[in-house]
Length: 561
Picture (cartoon, rainbow, N blue to C red):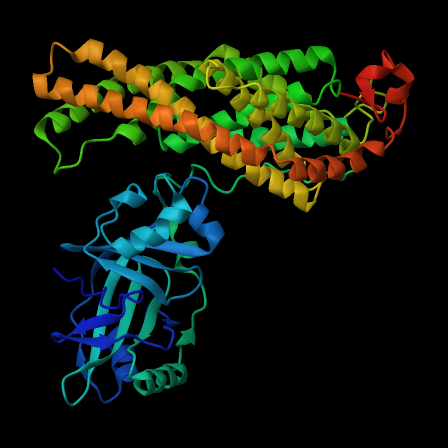
């Protein structure tokens, strides 16, 4: 059934009207608003002028505004709305603050993920923006919705006027021109502007809508990058980074507890790893007791969140077999999914118990209490007063050299643990580079981040495939007696495919590491960072780090590394 309010799929080349394809509008849609006491049908009739009017009665409407937990669409300047009328539904995609539709997808159900959207072009536009994140109802509005069509002497639709009257507030009218009939639209706009009480409406309906059921979750958290000044004290700069990570934890914890979006756990887990990495790599910045306590707490959280995240990745990777697959493959995939979902529910309950535990509350309280206090004027930690530019440069160079040493030692016969260790070192290096990206603003640094990501993709895939093989082999042992021969064969085939993927990924490692281990890039990168290591400690009170030298060979440019 065609949704009467969805007759303008702007991102599609043509509009079906009266059995033929008319070109779409080249003139942008324009919105107006009028007080509720003014009769809507009279305003529509005035806008359409002498055109024959086809205006069915307005019907009850429910508009839901969709976005991700971290509001990716809003940050990108787009709005995705789902309109429900009696017996009809549809999706609309437009720019924030503009009534002109980019894509109109009639007949679309309320999607949970981008993959659930049947409209191929809308799905292709949303997928890069929201990736695997769940779509949440962040706002909604109820009212009455109607569409009036103006027809010329040949009974062709030449203009459309939408009206929406929310439960509260004025009535909103939208003039939607059709290509080839721009003059008709311009005349209608002029008539609307002359009406008493009718004004142009440049507002965004999303902002006037009520909070949706998921509005309390997420939002736009503060960015992880703290943008420190190169000459800032290291303890002050690192506190700011930890404070930003603390915000990410606080924002995502409710989503983890309610199982709102699997990516909430991913963001929570990444923030935990980043915080632990910062505390481990930026040494002698905070008091040893504080560093040990925080690292212990973050390490505990990292271990608790790992199993559930692994299962989330497995469910995304495995999924349900394609409908056109063989019967044995479909049965094996369905049984595997049930098995994984049961494991996931068990791990999710275990993690929820952790996040509601007294130990978690004490850990978060200790972290917040530490960050609430300003850095002392006379710190005792050796690197507290060193400039963040000098300290971070020294640590980045040290970790960077460690990646080269570990990677060069890996051979064809090296165990898988060697690649896993390199992967962890690469993560620590990338976190440092991203924390202090603005401190070391240089092309060689950006290029190193790009090369590092390329290498990490290989190492991450290798790790994921190995974990998936382990889970699949455990599933085969668990379900072998309950599966028929065809399903067992399908599981064996999937195991073999994972083994082949693991072999290919391992083979690709040498080429990817060779592109990372570029002598020319290495020289440019180290040269750009060495210039940052000449800075002296920033003395604002107390003694500088150079007054506590214990082994000059462990220091570089006045910095403990």
